[in-house]
Length: 383
Ligand SMILES: Nc1ncnc2c1ncn2[C@@H]1O[C@H](COP(=O)(O)OP(=O)(O)OP(=O)(O)O)[C@@H](O)[C@H]1O
Ligand SMILES: CC(C)(CO)[C@@H](O)C(=O)NCCC(=O)O
View (cartoon, protein in one colour):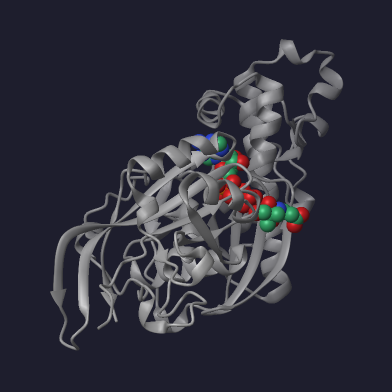
């Protein structure tokens, strides 16, 4: 007789700055589907922790007993360990820690593969996932499943990866930049004495970048340089004002510095993204990663950069679950017979989530951002 089926329902993405967790929480009901499979209903839950506070993540997993939800290894030496999908650099760096503290073995998934898997899953399964943001207007995008590829995925984490996606599991990392979310946070901490990302963002809300950035008008005596399409208010040189101001860092308001920094990083990524889209003739660019955090100023800056450089040809789009792409990709990579075990019947057998309830998404206000307490209703088919 087959052993009782077990659901593997935890996946981790351990990055340079943040650890992201996706886990399935069953509502206790199990039904039989038409083809005789068991269907377990529940929800996908999300959590994040700072990588430098990895112990908080271990405590959370322990407290919620998530470490008992992996795939049971049946072969000899690793009998007592559970295997859990993990991606990101930390899947390598922290493997021993998780094994020692929680008895978890990481079943490593490639980071880029997971990111792409996460985005494809979201775009195909979760209604109202992608949206545009331009001129203060947020609009959900209808995804045509037959016309989804190719697209460019720009994942803004600590660093930035740019991936051309041509299909399910068909992708190529075509570019990247080390000027990413980590740069914003690291420089921001040094320049403003802020202690956290949230503090830095809050500060940036109240700032004025023109106090720090050198504008075209500063160089051209207040006029546009219309011959090459630059208005007087366009930024000629990010952080250029202090060159001639004769001021020290202390003379500037930290909120202006934070604003200018956010603008510089977002603008630069938008421009590099556009150039890469141009290289491959891609019209759709999806931006993800926790740097965005649903922040209107960031999305607006990126959208304007893409719109400006592409002369309206390319479209920047954002994702509600922007920060959980890798973790979701790792989660959905649990497959039938996913371990290297020699006895296939003893594996946890779990298919990708087949159903995400659209109802809970139909009523999402266009202005709302995702927070960790939000969930995705779904069901898992056990085969
Ligand atoms: N609460 C937060 N604490 C720290 N950084 C945050 C927070 N929220 C958003 N961020 C931003 O998100 C970035 C991390 O994003 P993300 O989690 O997608 O990347 P990562 O996986 O840690 O990095 P990488 O993929 O490069 O290893 C940070 O560098 C910072 O700019
Ligand atoms: C190294 C990774 C992939 C780790 O997530 C990321 O931080 C990144 O894409 N950095 C940019 C590296 C570069 O292409 O210059």
